[in-house]
Image (cartoon, rainbow, N blue to C red; front, side, top):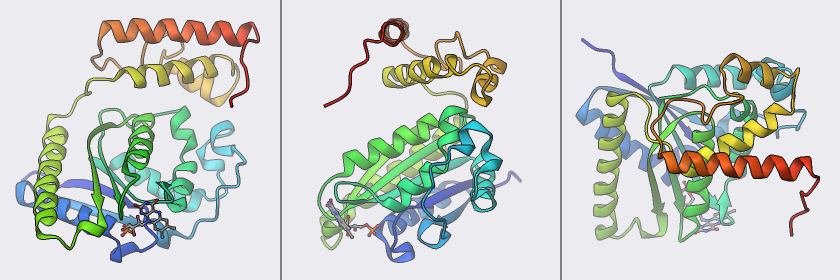
Length: 265
Ligand SMILES: Cc1cc2nc3c(=O)[nH]c(=O)nc-3n(C[C@H](O)[C@H](O)[C@H](O)COP(=O)(O)O)c2cc1C
């Protein structure tokens, strides 16, 4: 008998088990269970009790073990590493991601610099009473992708609509499709197709890391032959997108070299 799929779900709502974020992910879990044995472990960020990230950047510069909160963050990183799939779910608060989720993700800044979750599949969900899903879904997708994951599905729910039978039917349908896609992607394995924006993000990280000779990040990138690569992995990507990302990367480097970088407004 094969082992059940192991999924780690990070719940970024302060309302924990009461939240629609949790309830919708539970619906996805039930549908996954109906397809294939699946074990979902829930991490409620509202119960984690980590302080605000103090911005010391020890995780990036020295190593993740140097984080003052490593005793809490380290075991979660290990669980994410071992899981077949990851779910990041957060409500929309003030048209953005919750502070809880943002703070949690800050503890994983090192994973953006030294990604490792390649070929691990992820899904992301957002819950708003009305609107703001896109900002949160984009943030969660961008985060999981920056860690190396393939994000295979996004789902945004409006909690104010959940009392309406027609809306519930749609949520039922969408959670089913999410469960189908998630399980299919995990079973398929391998590396999914890379989008243009991910190639550009890679180039931005590459340009930054090239200037950090002697650092932990530089050594990590050097060991993996990423310093002159077009992407972290051999994941399929459009040759034109690769070419364009390479061109943009050169322009970025030239602007930095010439001191042409201007402040934003
Ligand atoms: C501080 C705060 C800010 C909120 N901001 C928004 C918002 O910008 N847009 C929106 O549609 N709903 C907003 N809401 C409503 C929540 O998104 C809604 O209650 C949702 O169901 C929360 O998700 P949860 O049930 O998973 O906790 C806000 C709620 C709180 C507490």
